[in-house]
Image 1 (cartoon, rainbow, N blue to C red):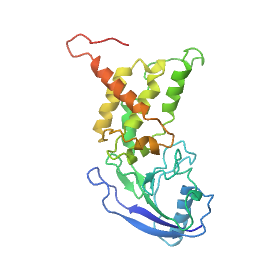
Image 2: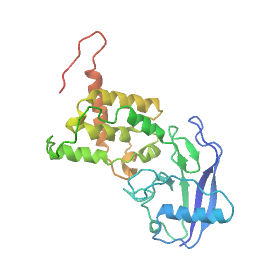
Image 3: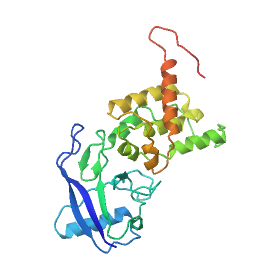
Image 4: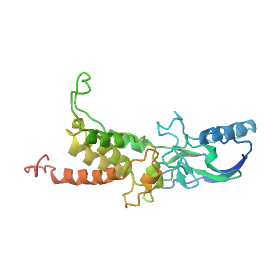
Length: 265
């Protein structure tokens, strides 16, 4: 099959104030593309063609190419990760496009994700959000037996649903406000339903929301675009849980010099 690519090319790193500076769409034609190629393999073929011509290859993020690392973040025809639901860009195959299709490939568009070069964006903002509290810091000692801490099946399922988040940033790229609430909600929900995560429950909600705001992510306006493009199909209920946990944390927060309000339930 033959495809025409329009790829965003940008040589210099952008800033939060101007995250599309010095960039432009460049047209490329590719012949003899196999329908069984993944989208990233097709970009590999493009880069081989460019290198043979003495041109700079297209820079793009990738790692495992198995849909579990969250590295392959590109917007394809206006949709993060492309047209297939529940699919990362590395798992998207060229048979999802018609022969002769014109495909537009861009990086994530968010002030908190500045473009480094071409299709590569700096997603270290997510790392800093995680460092603010998306972990369990209690000392647990040696590994315990699997049945040492009973967890109800329904609670375990909810925790696992949230834990499947790979931190790719598609939710941010799809949101008109560049909100990271699906990502942050997944981190909160992951620990909320497990006994190990209850110790730092209030602190986690407050710290993650504060870190998200400090990084410049927007707020949720309930368009549900994040769920629609999430390759792991994280449900938007985690955003509701994040909001509830944040309000709860603020209500029972102990003011300086005053008695704590509310209980632990």
